[in-house]
Image (cartoon, rainbow, N blue to C red; front, side):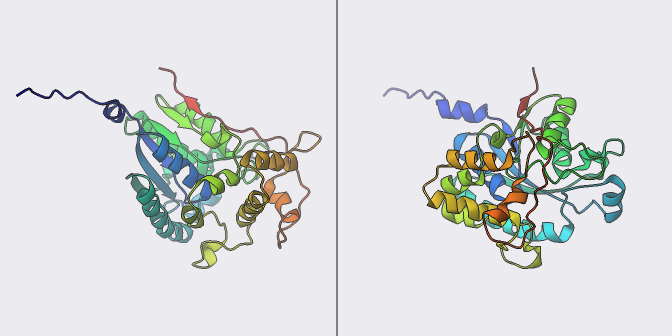
Amino acid sequence: MGFAISFPTISSVRIRCSMKTLVAFSGGLDSIYVLWKELVNTNNEVTAVFYDGDKITNELRDEFNVLNVEDKNFCNIRWIQIQKITNAMMAETRQFKVIKESYDPVFLNKEDKCFNHGAALRTAMAVRRINNGEYDKLISGVCRDNDGYQINRNSFVRNETASSLMTKYFIKHAKRGELSLPLLDMKYTTANAIAELPKHIVQLNRSCTSSLLSNAIACNYCYKCLMHSYSHHLLSEGKTPEQIYDIYTEKSLQADGSWRSQKAWICEEIPSDLENSKRTFPMPEWGHSYIVPE
């Protein structure tokens, strides 16, 4: 009788050599999309992390001009839905970790307050864990759909975006690892997620900015709900995600090179009570993916 000799398969080698990936996960459609892609396209060990504002008091928010850090009540509502979303995603893909982590006030910056935006704070917390070897890569679903508008307040630089702050912080402070902003590396709009993800996963998204007021997943009148409706509408007309990206860009990019946020023009496409603002901004500075050189 011979003896069977087993050798490692290619897949097992890949699994042993895979990276440990941290995905910033809000439960919104964009973060669902990047998490889904990481799960189905890689063998990486994935952890989805939801950041809550439990430790960022009202006093700290005022003192440090904190932006885009949701309060405890909104975070609690999101966390309930996030567990439903991630359970559904595991059933469709594979197992991964899901954790909740509070923003750490130690990263609040008194000298350069634009870095007190939630996206920069999430990056700072991830960099700490990447530098100490817990993770190798941070993925975020920031994209042009939702970027380049809300950061503008008080003394903030006009063309800074959530993604540009993430890239700048990572380049300056990361000693190893990778920052991945995949939705800025492609022509992405929410139409990509709606077209590619299972319908029941899309319907679970927690993108809505107003549903804190109820237990509903979507209010159907905030700008994010309207953007989803517009993407659904264009897809139903037979437009491809690539064509929809071009339509969005054409509406946002003005003849003088300035940028009109989708938050401003969406009410021209979908009837709503939102203000029809003609306000524009200097062309946003988008962030980009980055790998620390070895």
